[in-house]
Image (cartoon, rainbow, N blue to C red; front, side, top):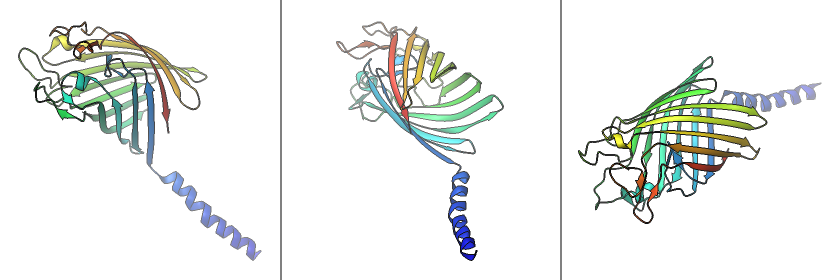
Length: 263
């Protein structure tokens, strides 16, 4: 009986702390990686219609605070003449989110950083940008407002008056649906307003489906916009990016195929 009591005590000493440690941790770390046929952001191709590889890491606390970093290859910074030796976007973000019943809320800030050497010949504004955002959600619907607090948003400037684009904003309305058996659907409409440059403001929309394959999630999305992108570039067609013969209408409709894995 004494041996039984000792064995029970040893087993308890080993197992109880391990269970308590698992249950008590308020920290969560996750990662993700995506391969896509195009990197389309707010209806605009960031890779001149070429494939993208993307990935990031996220941290969240049980209290609701979170932070993360995400990166993707891009082409527009170099093609647009903003920076030399630039082919990367790095996003750093953080905020606080929570829920009250079926209603969710999210507030935070996001900084877009594009490594590379400043192109001194063109003397364009720095494309690095910072936005603050607030979002609300209800069941399958979400609404998010983002507001630029940096002097320029993605380097936009009025080509005639040289006015800055601080105060530019984006409104995003998204609906999702679970069809069951790993299938999901998404529909979105957004409005990008570029401060002091109305020709660069536009509306975009997309519709898509996803399929959880068990080892990752495949997605197929159709995206389009009414942004002015007809080439060659003129001030009234601001979404023709690059120099001929590599210039592209980055606002035209696209079908994007992607595969994502979280871990």
